[in-house]
Length: 165
Image (tube, rainbow, N blue to C red):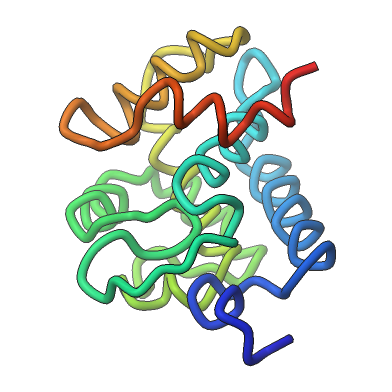
């Protein structure tokens, strides 16, 4: 379990236990930092993780770009670290997350840190998290994956169709 690629590359346990670990960490982070005015930042974070790393099941050999469950690049990591509000940094200390002293390489080892950075990144966006799937994709594409990113609606949908009810 601790020798698996999922654990080595994302800090996540294998199988259903790891899936539960991700859900719990998302709930903890959103419970402390807020789940957005539409009460669905947790859904957006899960969809981001599904799209970026297939919920930690995608093999990740990169060492220089795209770390962790959310495939954060160094530029995004440094930006979030610099612009995160102090009150959010203080709140995350309750989860033993020290944003100011986190290193980029730590994203590979801690699912909770990665999820915290995803939430902090989305907190920098003034618009509310949308509620319908197409708008969630557009929000993710514009604010997370960016116009230069490789994400497509088809990939986002394929990665998240199990979440659509």
